Length: 222
Image (tube, rainbow, N blue to C red; front, side):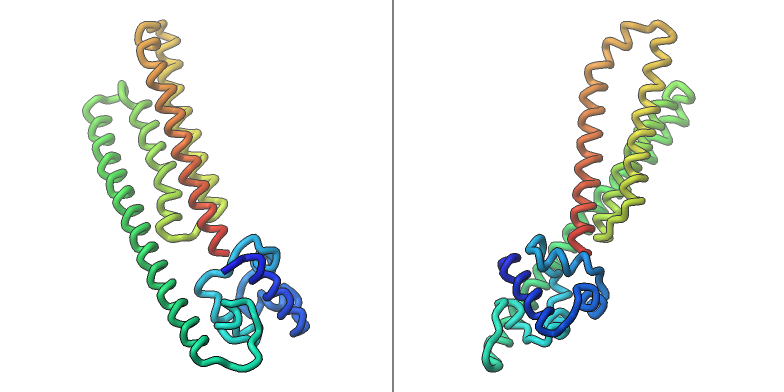
């Protein structure tokens, strides 16, 4: 389904019915921004929206999916369109389940690591406090976008919270470095600075990637 062709079809049919983008969006319980994106060919309607959209535009599902009006109803075409949509929904549902289980597995692993870190803190005491706090905050920064991915719903507040936890994790780690500087433990600092920089770059890259993925998926749902 070509986004530009479908967008032109939706816009043309909407004008024929004398509807504004806001009025069409209201019929679909969406925002007018979603309709605008379709009509500009920036994105495609969600699978769950196709049938309500066809009804709102007073066209058949086959006409909507082919972006072409037909002079008379064709039961075979309508049945084929319905079957295609059903198969697409099944495929998407399987993909959603796979994504959910992958996120759940990662969150379960993070939970196990968090329990282990708390045990390390209990055994080591204040010596490991900064490192353990940094790791726990880092796991939290990764967990927030994973939860949003599993729910297939991303909010700006969730992304901001995740990035805030990431900054807190970095701050905790650098607090440990400042302690070494104050104690003039230069040998320990030189031994750890290289691996630390690599870990920080990796951590920031993964955090940003997860949040961007969650944001992109959330935008796609609108």
